Length: 218
Image (cartoon, rainbow, N blue to C red):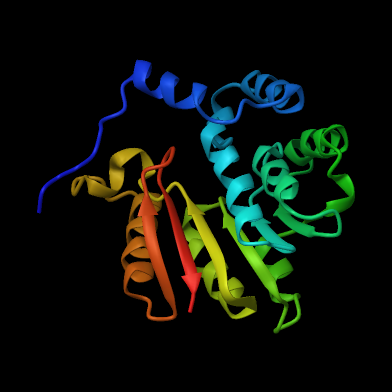
């Protein structure tokens, strides 16, 4: 099979970002405040990933969305902005500290009324949802060892043709390194293998940021 891909260099990545929708002042301020937190800021999604989430949410006409792992709120704002005014996003997180930042920016972004933030273990929150909850889109970006468990709770609650998105599926390239046997790497590898074979969905893995898998419920 002929390989057809472009390796991203810093100049090429800068070119890519400059041709994506430019973050508004709210998102720019959020990125700066999150960056000031230090190395943990790596948990925030990339600029182009946020633009993609908004576009995809709008494209499928999503009205009900779930996010597992909110951090300081960039991805939540991206999804919430793609929802209609009466749409709703349920955010699952365990940190009052990081989501305290998110709450401030939800208000600044004008999406606070669309977002419900629940501070509790995400599995508890998901299991408490109605078994037939009509979820249109779910974004999973939390502890890697629980990705599969989140998926199994969300998929039955997803409408046909609804989407589940998994972040970090390339795990900085570690998934392709046989020498890396760390717990998180093994968990991501196992999830990637499982979703690719799961007949309940149609899926594609994309090299967006740290890797993004999109699975459509059949």
